[in-house]
Image 1 (cartoon, rainbow, N blue to C red):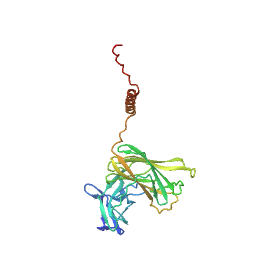
Image 2: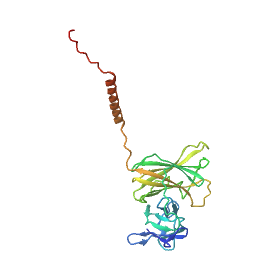
Image 3: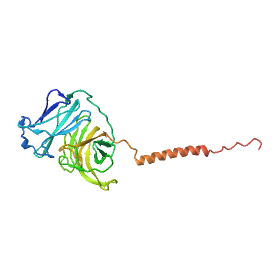
Image 4: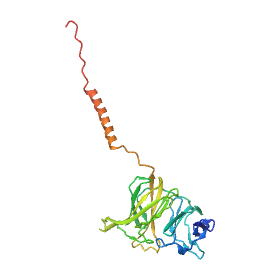
Length: 300
């Protein structure tokens, strides 16, 4: 798939057009939109971020009269360097393509990167929590569990967003690793070696309402050490959002190369025994000293 943007240069706050040419390599023959399968209600998903991972969007280009060409129009609110990924499905296979980074010009900061590892964030009028066992080590599977409450603490359910309770996107800090996945599915979106699967369930009763605490859970294996940002997209019940729109919450995750070294229980007992023996030896020498025998006096 080929990607172009117009006009050049792109200016923040001004209309821009993103064009995607779906074609068969190596000859570049166009693939008609009718040959692409609908996946989560759309024939194409496009996800983009600014390089600081603060700006995030999920949009859906539409087919044009030109075979193989999809287009979406909009405006970038902030300047900076952006990267996008496009996803299509053909013959049962999802193709996720990372495209060349491009710049958006304009006034204002081009990067405002702030890394925080808080596990509860505010999105609109809602509080979103992420539960994750840490530290996170590369190559191991972890559960990511999301829960939503109103700011007052009341449990909030999920409306379907594009055929799923939640969409989750995970992108590495260097923009090399990407995954877009959904709950309650067996097939997995996979790109650049990043593998994940997910499901949803009800949890423990909510103390405020007595209702089951509805969570959405994902199993994720992070392939490399480094920083990642997890973007959770959702539609809270009763939020009255426009169709195809959703809120999102972002969470930073640090992935370590290997687990911190820990002294085994056996070695801990062994070292403890050595320390106890050394202390006992010092006490014996100090308090149980042997009194020397005096030599007999002359003429005795």
